[in-house]
Image 1 (cartoon, rainbow, N blue to C red):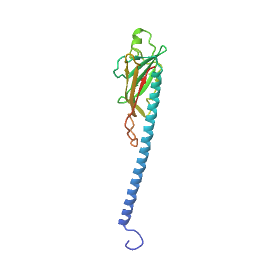
Image 2 (cartoon, rainbow, N blue to C red; image 1 turned 90 degrees about the vertical axis):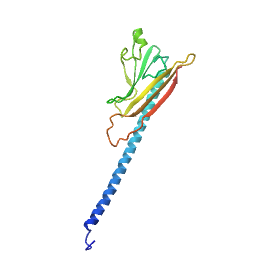
Image 3 (tube, rainbow, N blue to C red; image 1 turned 45 degrees about the vertical axis):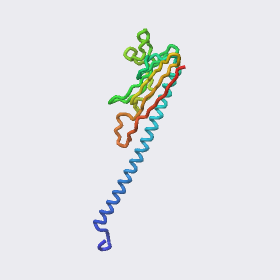
Image 4 (cartoon, helix red, strand yellow; image 1 turned 180 degrees about the vertical axis):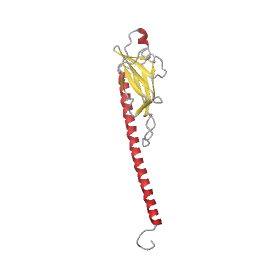
Length: 191
C-alpha cells in the first residue's frame, strides 16, 4: 500500500488469482465427488440387475425337465428348455454399435417336428410372448454371454450360464464415470 487508503493493482490481482485457484479446486472437488457417487450407484445397479437376471435364468433352467438346445457343449447365446410340454427359450443378445444388449425369454410354440428340433433357431421359431429379463432401455447393457450345456452320460445335465453386464453404450455425460464390465456366472444341475 502506497498511501494507506487502498490496495495497489498488483495486490488486487494477486488476491483475485488466489480466490480463482481456490474456486477451481472447489469445483473440481465437487465434480469428482459427484462422479464417484454416480459410479458407485451405477456399479450397484449393474450388480443388482445382473443378480436378478442370473436368479431368473437359474430358476427357469432348474425347474425344467430337459434342455432341448443347444445339443452340444459348444457355447451358445440361446438355450431352450422343456417343462411339462411347454418350451421356454432364453436369449442373450449382446450390444451392437447403436443398441444396448439385453436378456430376453419367450415361449415358442413349435408345431412340427422340424420346429421342435430347432427351438433355439429364431428364424424357424420366431419370438413369441417376450419377457425382458434385463431392460434394453436402461443404463445397463449386456456386453457378452453364453450358455454351455454338458451332457455327461450317466450324470445329470449341467448348464453353465455366464454373461457380462456393463454401462450403456451411449452414456455421453462427462460426469458419468466409465465402469468395468461385471461378470456373472453360475452352473446349474438339472434335476
